Length: 335
Ligand SMILES: [Zn+2]
Ligand SMILES: [Zn+2]
Image (cartoon, rainbow, N blue to C red; front, side):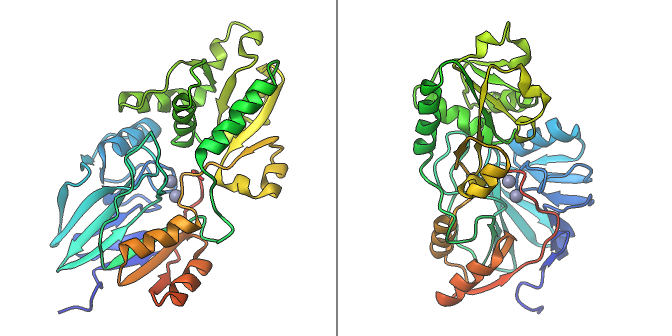
């Protein structure tokens, strides 16, 4: 009989499941990988076999042009991955196709959350609270200072600014996978049905979301605009890297906004020259992280991917066993 949980080993380049010789979100190519979601810090091309949800595999095919070795797992489907280990993909509520992965071996249950959030998002399936022995949680916003406001407030701010600046356009920086589509879907839900103009880098991912049943309304490419004038009084969405480059010169007097959890930090907004910071995050904030640990109520919590210290202290104060993992290669593509 081996020691409890000795079958799962956090290593710097990912989490290794020894009896199945398979890795979760590895930062380098491996023969067999389980991938939680399509963001670049979790999903990489070049694995021999990739097991992920169909939407994540479609995102990976789009981003890395690799289709070989794709092995789809539906939410809730229990997949035998060998060595007496099974993997079940459960919704994580982070972006389209995002999953927590429940691993079961010898009666022991471990969940790896990948990235997640608890607030509703019209573009993906909500996080499923699932019991387990070890809960491996992300901690991108693992400080009490990080509390994300309701998204409706941020969307109202954006629409108010649009109304007050009819001769400009509002240029919103948003990550191409997840954030952009969520902002668009929330704008539609709040009754904004005007054309939204897109940077070319957004087009394929928006189309992929629509193919997966997420309606985004009337979208057009900035490069197809008949004139600058056509975009006055409109919302334009571009990747954050395009906010201050030459590309934005084709826009009519753009007012710069950015949708990110980091916009909570005023200095970051100022540093980037953002005039309208929108605190919109696809990660759990401090309250969601602690609420989730309490609800899942594992024997032990492993913390990774962000600010581990404060969450470790919270666990200690609440008589919960916890440890911090030092995994490398996770950077916020997707805050
Ligand atoms: Zn992510
Ligand atoms: Zn991440």
